[in-house]
Length: 138
Image (cartoon, rainbow, N blue to C red; front, top):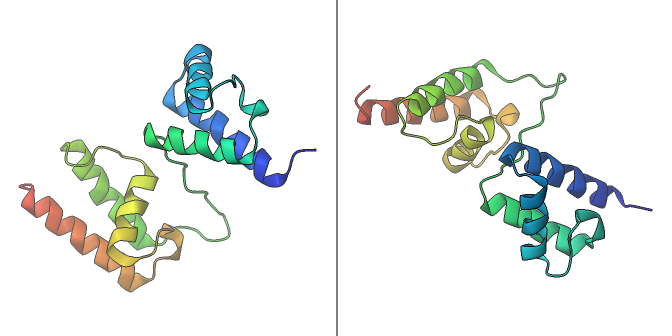
């Protein structure tokens, strides 16, 4: 019987396949390149599943942040998101995804989950994004 870890890995792998737009052939080639002799994620052990996830990550896939009705995003996060999208529209940042903003926020504050930013931390992120926009001529 599959472990919880295994089920989660397989789910992430299939989500990544879809979000990266990999065809079945490309996906199977990726598995074979990552773990020689294997053609299906179901045939991989836990270590090999992690290797495949690492490879998908290297190809640019990032898991999306889970949204929780119990902890909605603070208003400062929505403001940061608006500034982030302005940077994206100008071609300054290469991803409009929430995870890209979360990685930026983590570099600025040490907190990677946007839902856990305090008001002060949110202000730090917003001010950094405003300065970035100013440097880019906005």
